[in-house]
Image 1: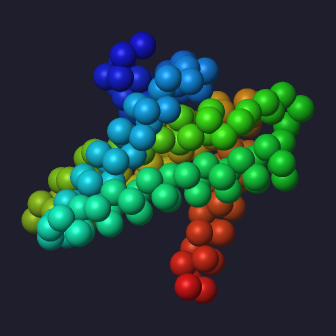
Image 2: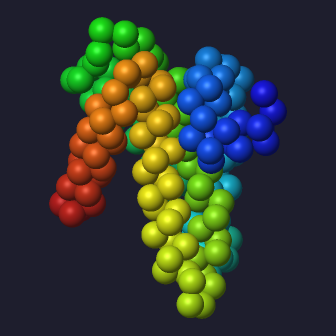
Length: 165
């Protein structure tokens, strides 16, 4: 699959696209590209002023968040709440979760007057959906609800860390 067809598949929540991404070790670089571009679009859509320092900070933060999110998901999904079919590694989670950032591309429209708030809400919900599907496929879960449990628990951990720091 091409990068474009993978992105379209992810945006459409196509499980087969995630399976293709999960099993293609060469897709990690593509996932990194999606994370970087998605982080930049989200920053622009939030109305951030981008000088060289802000650009680097947004990119590094996006990449660090992606790696930490994959790590927490691995711990929770593969070690704490695995299903009998769960077979995964960090690479699979990095690839699928990285591609799940694709809806962030649309965050750039969050800066538009009148509709910016609605755009941000739609993108946030879309990101939740793409991440849940990514986790379900990478962890080989049969249950979308269980994948949501892992995503929600991971989100709570990040909220707690943010609150404490």
